[in-house]
Length: 189
Ligand code: AMP
Image (tube, rainbow, N blue to C red; front, side):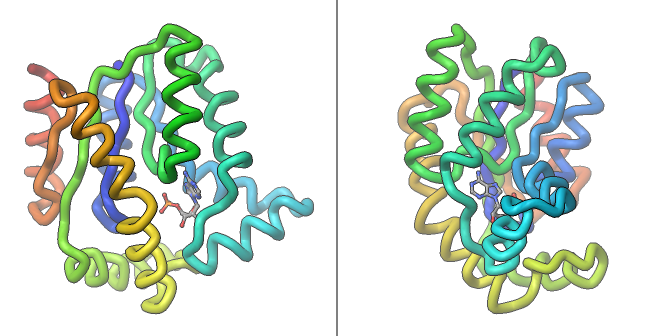
């Protein structure tokens, strides 16, 4: 099963993707998580990543496209994957579309977890206290919400139009368990 998960920061994509990954036994590819791990490398790239990510802005498309295409070709992803946090820009969208086409991979589901900016802010402020993420303070949160609305929402809209029969929307303001059961209902169809 090949699946893309969209949703603003704080929508619970990571939590839901982890649960789905366990349920369907396919890897959860979180680009945010991969980049956070890369920050530990102590090389030039790690310094750049720290600076960009702590500001709430996006890391360059070239870095992301390379990371994702390499990952998707590994044996780990041969039965499918759950993409969380990618594609986020039109450049990444075009890259992914041509990558999937060239490798004869087709998508099975595109899920869009929806919630209002207000709830996003509230959730991230709460998360900043429990997870201690550097990019979870109020100013950075607002930049991340803006970046999401400006760069990434149009990408999910592209999928809504182009992939109407595999595109599903989920109410992200519900309890985690209810979001999870809504998603499972869709995936088991
Ligand atoms: P996330 O955990 O998905 O919220 O990502 C955390 C941060 O990693 C983002 O605010 C970006 O700085 C960076 N990031 C993650 N995925 C991408 C992507 N696809 N394109 C550019 N930057 C990304």
